[in-house]
Length: 154
Image (cartoon, rainbow, N blue to C red; front, side):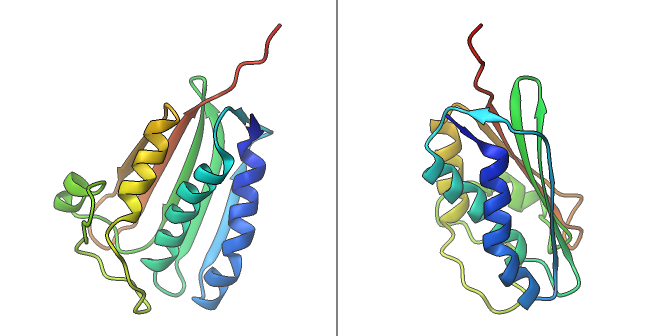
């Protein structure tokens, strides 16, 4: 078990330099410590991938915001950006392997089309759920990883 709030805080700090280089704002709104029973290395990989994608697809002057909050017995880890957004077609095939979406990285970065399928697999193996939403192309995207909170024993 570990505090996922602290881990997300460290993911943000690790990615801050990349966001600054692209002229973006990267912020975190975090709840008190939230304990989950999971592999911290794999969850780091999943959340780091979402943050990297948000930075990759958000133009200079944009924002990437993370939040960690408790809801319905889960730790809700939300990555929200003001980037390229997702078309309805993108949302339908988002978590498949080798899927390249309609949006293009804003600074010529590359993509294998595997990252989100790996994130989904990691989240699934931890008994969690990942969702994605976007008001449309050019209007940003929101990815949410929900993981069961570890219940403390009486």
